[in-house]
Amino acid sequence: MATIVFIQQDSLFEHFGTEYLSSFLKQNGHEVDMIIENRKKKLVELVRKSNPDLVAFSCTTGIHLWAIDIARMLREELGILNIFGGPHPTFSPEMIDTTGVDIIARGEGEHALLELANCIDGDRDITNIKNLWVKKDGVVHKNPLRPLIQNLDELPFPDRELYSRYDNLKKLTAKKFITGRGCPYSCSFCFNRTLREMYKGKGKYVRRRSVDNVIAEIKTVKENYNLEVVRFSDDTFTFDHKWLFEFCKRYKEEIKVPYECLIRADEVNEQVIKNLKQSGCVYVQFGIESGNERIRKEILNKHITDEQIINTGRLLKKYGIAFGANNMVGLPTETINDIYKTMELNSLIKVDIPIGSILQPFPKTKILSYIQEHDLIEDGVDINTLNDDLFSNWDINISVIKSDCKNEMFNLHKFFYVYVKYPVLRPIIRKIVKLPPNHLFNLMYRMSWVPRVRGTLRISYIDTLKYAIMLLRNVMMSNRRS
Image (cartoon, rainbow, N blue to C red; front, side, top):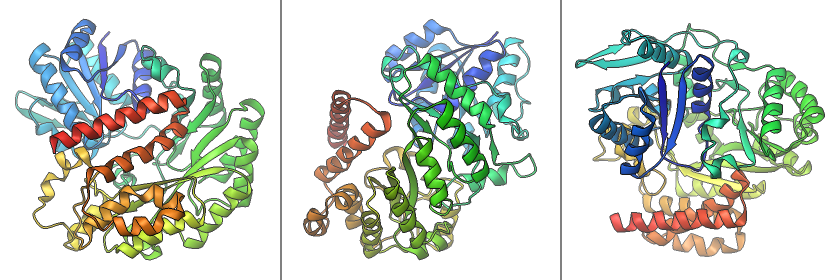
C-alpha cells in the first residue's frame, strides 16, 4: 500500500480531477490525503507527518510555478518523490527538465497513477508506465499515452471526503459534478483540439456517463451532504439532446435540486431551454467571446452567429433562467470598437454575469500558432517564455499580442462588468479608460468578481465580505511588489 498526498494552493475550490484520482487509488487499496497550505514551514511539517511515498500536484499554466517551487522544497527537505498532472504538464511536458521535477503525467491519470502507486508499493521500476514521463539518474523516460477510458461508468464517484478537514470547502452547498469527458468542438483558444489530436487512434474522445450513473452519484451526495445547488462542469452540457431530455426527466422526478450548467448558443432551442427550466436549471453560462462575428469564426473557430447568441439570451429571459457570458478582449486583429461591440452585445441580451478576460495564448493552442504565423507577438516577447512566469499574473495587465491601443484595452477589461451592467456610467467609462492603467482600475476589476463568486459558491454575505477583503489584500501586496 502506497501513500499519496495531493498538495493544493488555494482553499476556495475543490479540484474535481484530484477527487477522481483519489477515489480510484483508494478503491485499489492505497492511502490518499490532501494538504492545502501556503505557509512553507507549516506545509513541510504537515507533509512530514503524513510521511507519503509520493506528493502530487494538479496544475494549470501559471500555478505550475508555485507547484514546482513547493516540490523542490519538499525534495530538498524530505527527499519525497513528486508527480505533476493536469493541463500544464499535459501540454508542456518539457517541464520534466526543470530541476526538482521527478515525474509528469499527461492526459487521463487514473490508471497511470494507480500503476505508479503499485510500482512504488512493490519497489518495482517506474520508468515504463504509459502516460508518464519519468526522470531517473538524469535520464528522462518518455512513455506513450494509453487508450482513453471508454466506459466512464466504471470509475468510482469522486472522493469528496478528501477535503473533509477543510470546513470552508466541506460546508459549500454548491457541489460540482461532471457527466462526461471531452468536447466535440475545436475552438482555437481551448485545449480540447490539441488533446483530441494527442489521443487520435486511442478511443472515442467525447464520452458520456449514463443518466443512471449520474443520477446515482447526485443521490449519494444529496444523502451525505447539505446539497442546495448542483453545478455541472462539462464543457457543454447540451450537445446531445437525446441524453439531455432523458436526464431532465429523471432529474426533475428524482433529484429536485436547483442546478447550473454550461451551454453553447448554437446547441439550444426553445425545447432545450424549456426542458432545462422544467427540470430545475436556474443558471447557465455560455461563451460570446467577441462581439465581432468575423473574429469569432475566423480567429476563434467558434461558428456561432450574433443571431444565435441573441436568440439564446431571449429564450433564457423568457423562461427565467439566469445566465453568465464568457468574453475575451485583446484578440488578434481586434480594435477598441470591437471591444465595445462585445460589451454592447452582452448588454443587448441582458447578461446577468458578464465575464471579461484578456486572451492568453496558452501553450499548444491553435490560436498561439495563428499569432506566431501572422507575426502578432509583441516585440521583445520571447515565445519560449510563454510556458513560464508570463501567466503567473495573467489576469491583470498582460498581453503578448501587438496592439496600438493596449492600455485602453487593459482598462476596458477592468470595467467590463460595470460597463455592461450599469449603462448610466458608460460615458464616464469611455473617458477614463483613456487614462494610464492604474491600481484603482485593478481594484475595480477584482471587486467585480465578488458577485460572481458569491453566486457561484452560494456563500453568505459575510463570507463574500471575507473574500472581498482577501482580494483587497492581494491587490495591496501586488502593489507593493510592483
